[in-house]
Image (cartoon, rainbow, N blue to C red; front, top):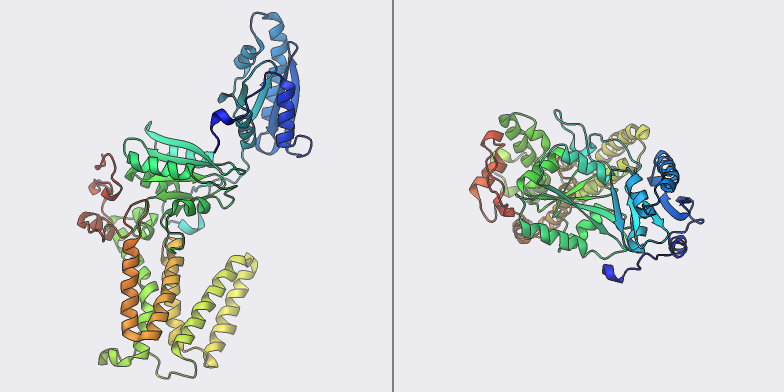
Length: 490
């Protein structure tokens, strides 16, 4: 990024500024670039804006106000034009810039830029209005009880949704800009007297160091620049589309990254246990919330270990005690068990991806085709054993129960790793793959935060907070692993 002193300064002659703006932003070529020129007491003014990001009513009111300034200026000869314009711009956000690069950047963000002949500065008026939808409950984080609002693609609305829940003067929302061409707004949110200063500095430096033309994939692109493990399948940040979840992490001392055009925010740092919590657990009584959490934990472990364990016992039935001898297929069939599991596993992924791209009116028909024509016929002809379908289905449901979509996809990749090792090396392969998996997770860090905390390194109190949904009046501590300034909740 160039330093401010390297930018082109605003010229005193407005015609040179107009030529620069017309060449730079394509006035007359791009249909969405707006331009008007008026005079106040004989002094030319040039006004630039984007049609799609500024409402017509705001432009009309601004022009009416500036035209009326001309008559007022003739009576007040003692005041210069700059002062007259400044006093009559009644917009709630008015700033001044010194360089043409800043003027262009602000205008392309959706602000109005005003140049005045004879002055080396320009006015910037914030009346932008981003097109978008209204806040609604996110599909992937629904709750039975609780708020129905969710983040949208508008960064201003998203920060307002968090401000509504934290009316604290120490909440900070710092705006950064990423992308040489896209110039996408990225907001770093934290609570000043809670979040660790070194953590805030480190995150802001990482965001500022992002050097790319544009981040059209928004938050995912930012995550990949923040992550040191580029090929790691596990998510080192947590995504959420719920403002209450984001605010809860803010109060714990985490940092929230909001990227414009994205309906989800990034929570960091995070651990694997953060990905296994859900807002529904905090919308029920502590006992019910604990029960729901245990079911989720069981589902996550089932999605990882149930299928390779069943395959292991099917291939080595001598490992089973006599009272569990019913586990495993009675007839092996012509297709090996591992191949059956692999085909069923890939088939489920086919159906999942097809469901994403299938229009809603056709989704029911696709489900019938999958269940009747594919599932039943495949069993009848002997391609699949019924038990294979059963355990693959349980594993798939366990993946869907996993609160974090990113964690569930990562677990699918690791499950394939378990299946291959177990099929190739039997008991030794299964044990080795589990140990390698645990060592791999223990080596991961999210912004220098151990991924398996509070298990590794062990923290009994924090682990207790995860295993049980502790009543809110008894939840008196923030997570120590992120080193908050204030450890105790008031």
